[in-house]
Image 1 (spheres, rainbow, N blue to C red):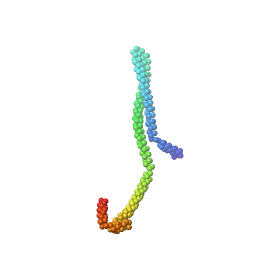
Image 2: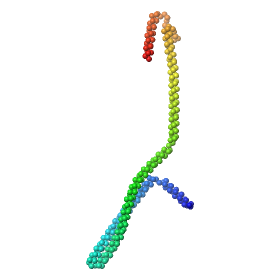
Image 3: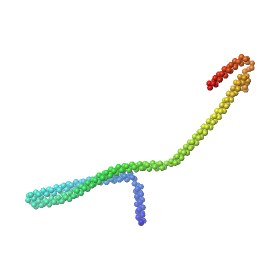
Length: 260
C-alpha cells in the first residue's frame, strides 16, 4: 500500500469520526423528515405537470381524431358528388390527421401510465412521511429517556457513597460516646447525692438522739449538758401532775407516730 493511499484512508477515517461525533440524532431525524417533505413537494409538482401534459395531449388527440373523421366525411361527400379529385384531397387530409391522432394516442397512453406511476409514488411517499414522523417522535422519546438515564447514572456514579456511609458510622460512634459520658455523669451525680443524703440523715439522727437523751434525763430527775431539771423542793402533788401531763403527751406522740 502506497503512502498516499494510507494518508487518504487516515483522512477519511478521521472525517468519518468527526461526522459521527457531530451527528445529533434529533437534528438528523428532523432533517430527514424535512428532506422527505421537500421530495414530496417536488413529486406533487411533477404529478401536476404530468397531469397537465396528459390533458393537453388528450385535447390534441381529440382534435386530431375529430378532424380525421371530419375529412373522412368530406371525402365521402365529394365522392358522392362525383368529384374524385376533391375526394382524394380530403382523404389525404384525413390520413394526415389520422397519423397525428395515432401519434398523440401513443404519447397519451405513455403519459397516462407515467401519471399513474407518479400518483402511486406520491401516495407511497406520503405514507412513508407519515410513518417517518411517527417513528421520529418515538425515537426522540427514546433519546430523551436514554439521556435522562445517562444523566442519572452519571450523577449516581459521581456520588461518593462509601465516604458518606463512613461519615455516618463515625458520627454514630461519636453519639454513642456522648451518650456513654452522659450516663456516667448521671451515675456520678446520683452517687454524690446519695452520699450527701446519708450524711444529712446521720446528722439529723444525732440531733434526735440528743433530744431523746435530754428528755429521758428530765424524766429521771437527771441533767444533761444542754439544760437543767426542775428544783428538788417540788411537792409530790406537783410531781404527780407533771407525770400525768407527760403521759398524755407521750400518748399523743404515739398516736401521731402511728398515723405517719
